[in-house]
Length: 139
Ligand code: TYD
View 1 (cartoon, rainbow, N blue to C red):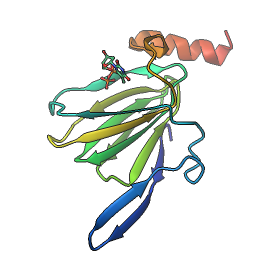
View 2 (view 1 turned 90 degrees about the horizontal axis):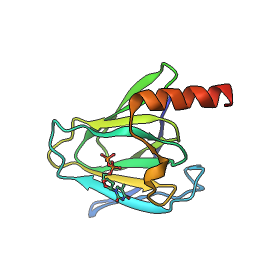
View 3 (view 1 turned 60 degrees about the horizontal axis):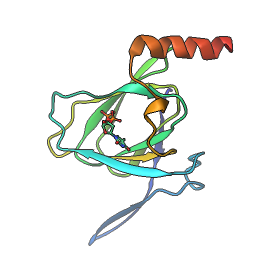
């Protein structure tokens, strides 16, 4: 597995539901420093297309559905479908991600381990592969 799926604690009764994300309970492994969300995405648009050198994230599809393509740069890929608000997908650093197949009502919540820093992004796939291979060689 490249990404880690976590089942979030859900409190439901006849009147509705509440979902909790708590670092220690879910063994998230990093502090959450920033939260943002993606919505109104055109169905055929592919978001992401980048990796992060340091940043780690949890993706939660709080409404609607979308799919995530993950690639560890070492020959392994994975497709994950998110369509329920009590499931989170943890993406570690150095993973290429593409988000696609957004439902018209999709709201994708992202909990991130760092503040926004464009220098942490690798936006070119060939550079990503090179970067991962340099990490493996310890260069
Ligand atoms: P980007 O991370 O490329 O979005 P995605 O991977 O979902 O396609 O960000 C899109 C734009 O928003 C880009 O110009 C950077 C900007 N941005 C911020 O200014 N702050 C942020 O916290 C994020 C996530 C993006």
